[in-house]
Image (cartoon, one colour):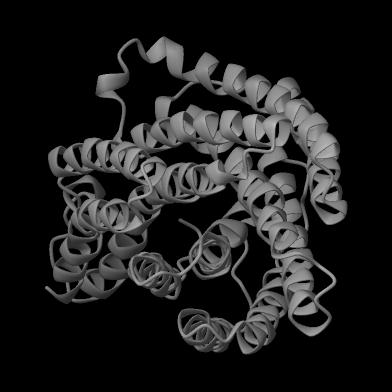
Length: 380
């Protein structure tokens, strides 16, 4: 890696705390919209900021300036997380906007080449992060913007742009297959159109428009699936692919479930299924994909941090693949998928306490495999 951000793991750890915090609050009766807000900003957005500090400078082959400024951005995210978890959304929105604005200004100092499709996806994701943060603050000050609009600006504008862009780069790279660049560019431009249509539909909150835009977005996702599975197919057996790719593909399963639920809700207006849709998109699609990204980035970040320190001491450095027990990582993938499915089932049965408890157990197993093992390695 050209640049190593020591703050990326801290952002990931903070995001995981917010994920578990949302589940605990949910068990204590927090409604699904407030839960979605905590997940959108505290989990999804802060994870992507941490990943952005690692991915953006490396995509530009530049060292980020004023490295210690990452610490200021992280501290504002910590304060924002405190207000998210204590239910003070006004102060949370203020500190969140500060976090996003500072992050945007900081990483913009290294961006000079936006020709690669992945970089364009990430730039679009950062733009939507600012828009969502402004929407969130305005929703708290004026009450004119619905929280549903805020949440979907994060999921459609920020999350999907980031995931589509990163997976178009990482999956072919990890499988050592080529990417259909032309179709990748088509996906980028089509997604920007459908994202604007969907967010606009939620702003005016018209189910007919939401359904129409949702169908268009589903078509874009199908094109994306074609591009990705064209790269996966030559690998023959999905059982043999690296755990991060399994998490990505597992996330796709819940993306499909979430999209189908969204289309059903928009067409039938059966709003009682909204919590199930939220679980599929947030705890299924977003979390599994993010965990896959963490599995790919974290060992490399820690390895490079330790490599520099121990190389100066003349000590032997293990291979990066030795930092994670891939058998346990694979086991964690299956536990997470089963846990997500059970969560959806119990949410459908209106048993949020059981659904949240199952997911906490599944995600904590992943936490131990990733964070605890890497921390032990780093300390040694």
